[in-house]
Image (cartoon, rainbow, N blue to C red):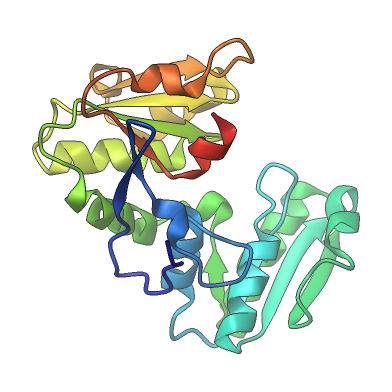
Length: 234
């Protein structure tokens, strides 16, 4: 299947080996950066004079933001700390300027200040923004009404929570979100902070283990895996 560059185009659902996949990673505007967060990055960047963001070990989004800016032909500044700066050098697009700070707090403050003074778009950590909420809600439009479960692999829980909000807002509370977590406590805390008070009625968190195949969570008729990269990870 061909890559999709239009952020407004709804990615298809495809059946592979008897399982259904929402192929959101078919979206790829900047080479090497695909999927839900890449779309959010582009939607925020459109019609902006430049981009500025923070790059951390937990949220290494400097590469994606800089690559998106390069495709749009606009400048980009990536703020980071000494601890992770080495990751950026030699790998960043030529349009990106890397600014190194002594610690995390100084980096965050400088990124926000940079946006205010330069007029460059501030790209939030983890692409956690209104554009993400709205984009995911639109992508959920082709999820069948009778889908019992959407399975999402996540590091922080942001995309999973956007899907959960979309299901509630669209009156589809019978569709549950099963979240496969790298760190279940991290996602639990994120849902507690940003989700509805009764999120646990709409979502189930499970920790990913080497002993359990991701496919096992799709053994319910009509269940859909979010993003085809699960096919490769199994």
